[in-house]
Structure formats: structure tokens, C-alpha cells
Image 1 (cartoon, rainbow, N blue to C red):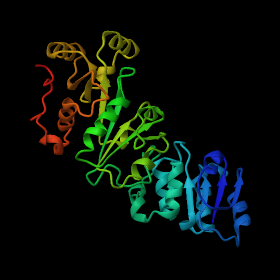
Image 2: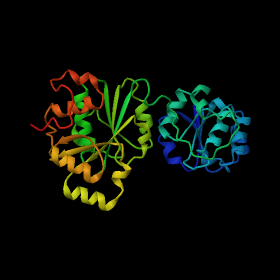
Image 3: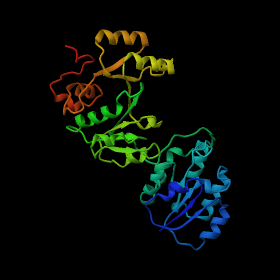
Image 4: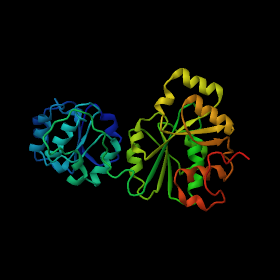
Length: 331
């Protein structure tokens, strides 16, 4: 049975599907927690870090490590710069507190799969140099490694078709790969009537990635999520209609400078080769691939195989498309 000490994240912690013997809510001095839980048997103590008074002072967290078995502690961190700084995380590791996360669903994962020092050694600064710079981290080590390809998709122009494209690409990849498709912070996948498609939130994205250990490819419709760092590769979709492009430029005149050296894919495109050359010249950019309007009810579109081969999914190269070319849709 487990103990929950909550404050800011009380509602989220209440959704965890775990056995709880005692739960308290509020702000507490560490000494208060010691008094409450002395001689109290529990498996894990899950602590919302905002429930510790003065939690941004690492010395108050040190009191936890002195008074409790650190192997039984799981800290749910907040998003403050101090708590996520290199020095703060390093000192947690120094105290023997290895189980910490910003991901609510990772809490349950850590109950059954606690971290060892090896899992958090990358946060441990042995040089003694303090850093207050925020650290991007996740409890699931190895994301994107071991041959796993995680490809993110983002609409640059509004409604550029990321959701449907991810769905169609998944169907094409399934003939040669173990593939998972995930959308973030929306539930548009439900309209595609495919129960294998997954919907999640930004907070839970890393957990959903890690919860597919057999996947060879994960396709992610990121929508507005900022979790680009979880992807090995990113595709930026532009629907090259005149109105869409004018709206894009008016909203951000530096957009193509920001997309320099990124994989720009024209989707739902009616442009021919000359049009694309003009687009590249005027935008001072390079188009990675051009995808026309497609029928999402068709089982197979050769152009999508060509696109996937261009991305490096070589097992699809046995199709009759031959070597993928940028403009092979034009006769």
C-alpha cells in the first residue's frame, strides 16, 4: 500500500490507479511528515513536491533523505526553474533520491520499476559546479534509442493535414514495421474509427512512448505540444494555397527563417515542379517532399511509400516505386 502527500497536484494524483493506505493534502514541514509517518508501514511515499514547505530550498528536501528510506520516495516535481535546474536534480541524486518525475503517469511506472543510480547518473554533477539552468529530462531513459524511430508531425499552416497523414502513413508502414500512431492534446483520431490509434496529452506523451517497447516506429501528431525533443525526426507540413501562405506570413514574417534546414513537406498540394521551384526561391527555403491531395479511403498510395523511403524506411523499397524522387507524381 502507498502513501500520497499532495498539494498543488492533488487532483492529478487522485486519478492514479494505485493502492493507497493514507493520503494527506496541504503544505507540511518535513518534521510534520516524520511525526505522521513514524512507525507507519507503506510501500512508497508519493510526494507532490509543492506539499513540502520551502521545497525550492534543497536543504528541506535533504531532511526527507535523512528521515525516510529514499528508495521508498517518489517525487512529483513542479515546473519551476529552480526545481528543474541542473544543481537541484544533481543534489537529489546525491541524496539517494532517484525516483523523480514531472510526468503524473510515470509515478505509477516508478512504483513497479524504481530507478537505480544508472538511470539518473546523467543528472549527477560530480564536478561540484552548480547550474541553475533548467534541465530537460524524462524518467524513461533510452527514448528514441535502440533503433526506434520517433517521427513528429506539425502543421505550419492551419489544418495542413497532419492527423490524416499520420493515419495514412501508419497504414503504409504496417506492412513492414511495428508502428504506433499517437496524437497529442486532441481527440481527432476517434473520427478515423481505428482503435489502434492513441490519443494522449503533452504531460503523458513520454509515458505513452515508453509504454510501447515493441514499437519500431512511432508517428506523433504533435499539434501544439512542445515535446519536439522526444522525436528523432520532425516533419513540418505546409498546405501551399495562396490564402494559407499569406495568413502564415502575416502571422510570422520570419517563419521560413525559423524552418531553415528543417524537413518542410507540402501537403494537400496542387503545385507542379515549376511552382515548387518558385516557392523555394521566394521563401528562400527547400522543400523535402511534395504530397498532393490524397484519398484517405484508399488502401494504398504509392506517393506515400516514396515519401517514407525518402525518410529512410528502406523496407518499403521493395515496391515498384524505385528510388524516391521529389517530383515523381508529375508525369
